[in-house]
Image 1 (cartoon, one colour):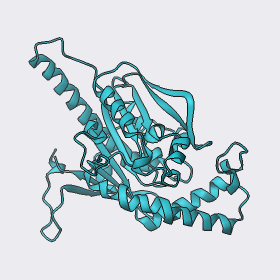
Image 2 (tube, rainbow, N blue to C red; image 1 turned 30 degrees about the vertical axis):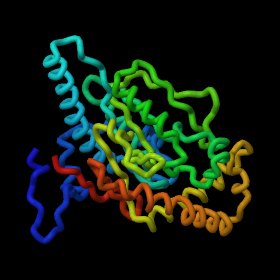
Image 3 (cartoon, helix red, strand yellow; image 1 turned 30 degrees about the horizontal axis):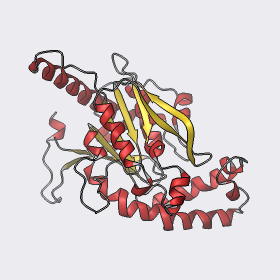
Length: 323
């Protein structure tokens, strides 16, 4: 693919990425049809996201085409490896795509759009989506450890469980269970699970999925979750924008989900607008912003592809790691 090896201008710093603006990236769509309607897209958007059909056409269809190339190459490699081993070694191993990024950046929308578009590829591959929320420790464990205020930080996840899950995925396990996390009650729901039945493609979405990881002594782990990923995406935006989007989302939730009597955040439902804005700003600056700078943003350059958002929440630039 010549577009991946074009020279970098001499006045730019050395980078492992090729950068595309929206128009340049849209040109790589190569006639791929848009299978979504506006109503279907509305079902995929998270609260506060503004992605439109033209953005799906310009950004997500070229990305889907690229992922089609990657998955086909992986399948061909699996076939040839089985031939090399003399037959009897060919397993159905899912191709794993990871999506990382900050709170409020729109990871969930990106994941759902890609899941839907990939499922329309020739042969209609099965595409499963798992979020790392299901691997958070239950609230009672976080409270016992005194880290409830650090929910979403690396130490709040059962990383051993997540690592075992990914190892099982790449071992071709026929049926796996992921604990169900409820955003309404803000906790793992006992006895409820998502079933993952050896899909063709698995999308894993979460805050810290690209971390290298370390053990309790601070030494880098020999094996980390990101070792099991075939392709990785980081959804990016400036921190000021992220804080603004988080506050806007908090205000919308105050008028909707927070009013639900079963919501963990019911106490926020009765806040005035000014009180809600102050509360959201405090949460961002004491928790989400700290996690972003310490744990999430440092992993950005590990991604194969970076999607950069502008002030209106639309994707403006794409950076693809050179092959």
